[in-house]
Length: 309
Length: 309
Image: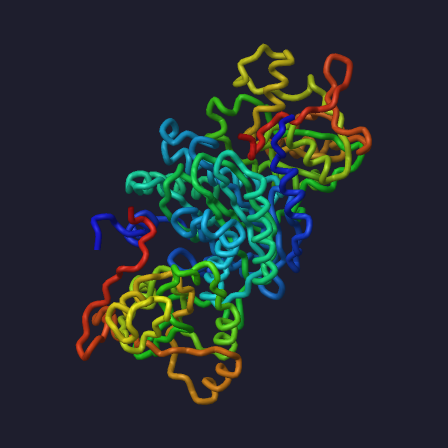
């Protein structure tokens, strides 16, 4: 009845060659999606929403990179739980007037990202509104070798480690990062993590969250924190450390674990997992502190605040 | 570090007294949520996004009614699949600057709706952006007595029925409707539906979808379509029928089924399920047609188009 293709027509075009999730009972084109969860009955779910102008800049990065990030941040949450991605649902809010090229670019990006991350699109919803592009992804997974890991479970005296360098993600890595699913599953297969999360809002905000959930404190060793070259501040400087602690969107894993035996360390190294030790957990009463140049100070949470104006 | 409460603080306040989903393995405050799916392994998922200015008007209805609608439209999708709601995730995009009273009103609305619809909040994500309020809900369910019903499965010669009157939902019912979960589960327990969906975009748009999925046609009896008094057009008029067909957001169930035996009909009536017969399925080659005043015409899909500008 109109010049504008309908949602059904757009979807039919964009979804034609999408991969199917293993175990799909019901896929796109119905009121619900349904997936069989292999050998166990636990559904693991993550839901992160990203918005143009805040988490990406559509004009600069284009729809494919935005779509990839929308899926990657959710898959990263599953990695934090050492769980295995299975499928995802997509809620799109397109800026009015809805443009077919934007829709098609997004769907092409989601199709590529779905293949890359082995996680099939199984359903969702598309709308148009007077506002920025909103990409709302919900990813469904199944538990990995240690079940569903969480931020709780760290014990006093555990080692705190990260899987890679932090800071400066805004120079491009926030769009191109690879979710640490393989690393998380290797760590879980070796029985290593006691508590784990991904560093999305900055270590200075996320480490206290892990500590609160585990009811422990922490002493972070400032000179042990791996700083990414992208921070652009002199190596070893406090400015560089602050960027590593506060920038956020690193999407490396942060975990608490017992000291690694040489055998486990060698096994992880053989699987390409490199853990960088950044501190230890302490009794909760000591709080979360940062050691820098011989003295310690409270770790100030200056990372990303989703509700800051 | 700021006058504005952080996401963590807001959530801690709002979520304190939320009910817990049965089978919750991991709830709010971690990177993922995880739920044990009782006796089977199929995760049923629905994801519908609603936006201020399009699906509700926040200034007129307030945050509690908006939150209720966001959950209800998703629970209605589970009803369409004759599946049982278990838990939901919430993706919030708040208009900038984020207002605590809006956040608290929404969370109170979601808490009330969660109790009403027996579906617990288990996780989600909160953001702020320069745009309208976006409520993105993903609901997780488990299969009902017939498994996961879909739009496919109708056979030529089936009866087409709806569970209640259509049209005029914009006068208020689009906010206050009760998702037809009880009706769907009673129908499934009696083995009745062959194909089912909820009427969200208007019968004139949704019936052809059921027919496409089932590879059948349909003959809709115009004078049998139950018209809601809210349409405000003279009973029995074509204007009233068109409103019933096109307005949308009815959230009644539309189903195809074999003719009911008197025993099944009595059993359903005893459970409070009232089916109104509105037509029959036909061979696909006949298309989807509407009989009105003795002649038949193609059913024009004039219902809600999510991407219309």
